[in-house]
Length: 122
Image (cartoon, rainbow, N blue to C red):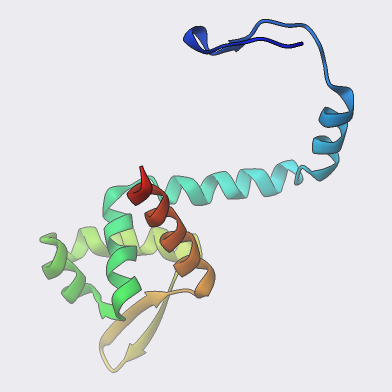
């Protein structure tokens, strides 16, 4: 039997559970997919971007409104929105001279909501 030593966070055995390892290996996504997933989590690692996503979870907003809400410059908000657009987390539409931003789709709402629930549970 394998003993887990919590105080040093390591497994003190040399047994390899080949069936488990092989089964998990078969279900692992390709490396490129995992790298893309990692990039998405990097986007979520910035608190300003998370605040923007939180705001857009509530309503479609323009850069000026987001800047006022977060107490930041339009330039800094635009920079963060550009990153969120590149990650395909937000969409935009033009109405005359005003550009409105919104969450890209229900997937983004689900990711955000589930992450928020996880944080609130701990």
